[in-house]
Length: 301
Length: 191
Image 1: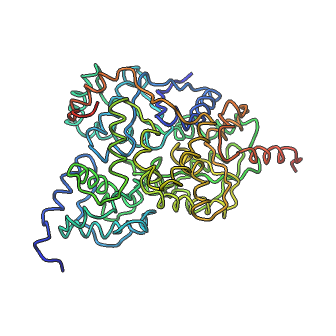
Image 2 (image 1 turned 30 degrees about the horizontal axis):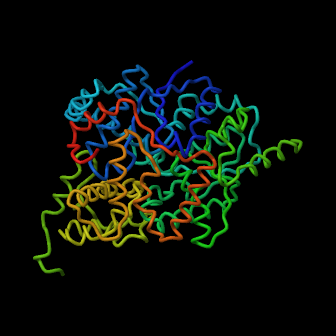
Image 3 (image 1 turned 90 degrees about the vertical axis):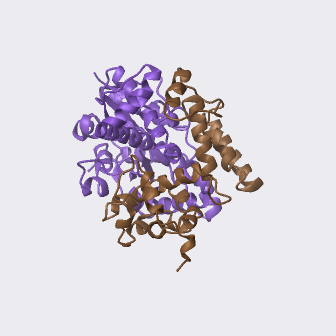
């Protein structure tokens, strides 16, 4: 069984626990093991870069050094923010020997060192390119036939652009849609699929974040989505937990379920909803499950 | 035209000096196409659009830039950086300005962002991990009593679903972690 260094990130221990359990369950069903990095620390989110670049850098360097020490050189992060921070911290050190040396000087205090041998993947990228869309499609036992899913990429899974990426990779990715099609769901196309959910503005500028969430929810509703699927805990929390506040403050009436893409994958791969953390939502996802069973009862052809 | 005495001509160089790892072309390459402003999802909540802010940096309008809420309204979505035809990374410049304004304690009254960032960083320096409820004091009173009530109601729903931690999580080797941080920045005053 191929193993990956798994970096869950802080949110997956708490508000996004269902992302964690569904990620581990799906990986297991696909024959890969996510081994949590021993004693990992916060990646710094965005607030660290607000305070000090080197401080933000060293937090990521420690996690990369821990993965290297465990000799698991393929690192997987399910949170888009963690992924972006770890990916670019690694890239910066590979580009700049002085920075690498500086980081190693700091890491020494924790009896660690880093040589730059780790590759950082987003969880979705690991499923889509390391395991493969076709392999996943072949493992589907309970296709999500008839479920219209709005794939929400958010920001930091794709941006900023990485070296060697094309305009298409950054502005017109189809990985999410391909993955949804592979599990039998119907991806819906909507213009806001890569527009920001508001991220930490939910804490620092509430009116801005609520307005961004409203636009995003409205766009998915207009496109006929039954559910929005996310690949980032902050997007999920903003869209779901603050949906009631959008309704109250902006006079809307949304009741859009927001689910992790791993939860949808798990259902299609035959996992029980409870094993995927389904049931911990504030906006019920039951209607999607009903929608699926309704479709399943309808004879094909 | 502003009186020359209010301008800081070297300001754009100062901003560039804040970008050690943040990549991108210098702001004076801006051709004012405003695609950054068009790409920005938060622009309507900003005092100045990203393009205007770049123009202000280039003009040396340091005081006006630091009095603007623009960079604190940036959500780091990087849409501007992706689209700039000149290779400028406006999102990285927003980060740079946040750092500058925190170091100098110069930001407009009533902004939550600076306090939030400080609390976040202190929590992580203390525990090695993030703890969401710890940041609430930065913003919870913003909505007055009814805002507080709604925030608590939301928190109760999360608590009922087992999604809100009551005690902060901590890494095991927190002492050595802090020693590591101490080799980057002084930790005085953060216990």
